[in-house]
Amino acid sequence: GAVVSQHPSWVICKSGTSVKIECRSLDFQATTMFWYRQFPKQSLMLMATSNEGSKATYEQGVEKDKFLINHASLTLSTLTVTSAHPEDSSFYICSARDFNAGLAGGTNEQFFGPGTRLTVL
Amino acid sequence: GQSLEQPSEVTAVEGAIVQINCTYQTSGFYGLSWYQQHDGGAPTFLSYNALDGLEETGRFSSFLSRSDSYGYLLLQELQMKDSASYFCALGTGGYNKLIFGAGTRLAVHP
Image (cartoon, rainbow over the protein chains, first blue to last red):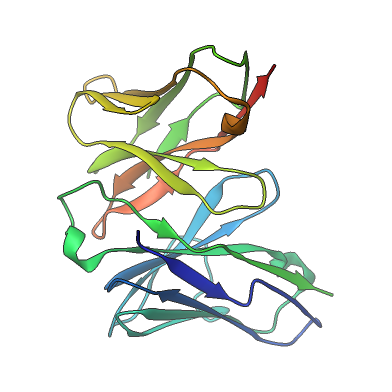
C-alpha cells in the first residue's frame, strides 16, 4: 500500500527558533499534499494544501509567513514553523493523495504520515 | 464555509453494532469519507461515498444521503481493537481537500 513518511517524528525546540518537518510519499507520486495540525483529543485542522511546483494554498486563519510550505518534488513537501512559540506546540500531520487517483475519481483516499510532535519550550 | 457534526462519544460492547452519524453543511461537495485514528497514530482510511447509498467494506459500511446532507458509518461485530476515534471528512474545494469533523471516540467494552 501507499506509504507516507514524516521526519522528524518528534522535536523539542526553544522559543524563537525555526523547525522544518519533511513529508515524503515513498512509493507513489503526489502532486498534492496536505498539512494538518491536531491538538490533543481534537480533530485534524487543515492548514494548507501543498502543490508541486506552485505556491501552497492556506486555509483561513493560517499565517503563511509563519508556516512556510515548499513542495519541491512529486514526493516531498516540507513545512517550516518559523519563530516557533509555545502555542505552536502540536501534532503536525501530512497526507498525500496518489497522483493517479485524480480529483473526482476513485475514493479520494489520503494517505497520512505518522505525524510530528512539536514541543516549543 | 463547511461544517460537520458527529457525536463526541459512543460506547458499545464486543460483538455489537454501532452507527456513527455525521451531518454536514457545504457549498461544494465531492464526497464524504471516514477515517479511523488510534491514540497517537495516523488516521487511516475506512470508507468513502460520493453518491447516495451504502458502501460495504468488510465489517464497516458507510451510507450517504446528499439530499439530507447526512451520512453514517456502521461498524459490525465490534472488537476491542475498534476502540478509536472516528472522523467523517468532507471532500470539497478545488483540490478535493478534506475538512474533518470533530471526531467520535468509540469505546468497546468486553
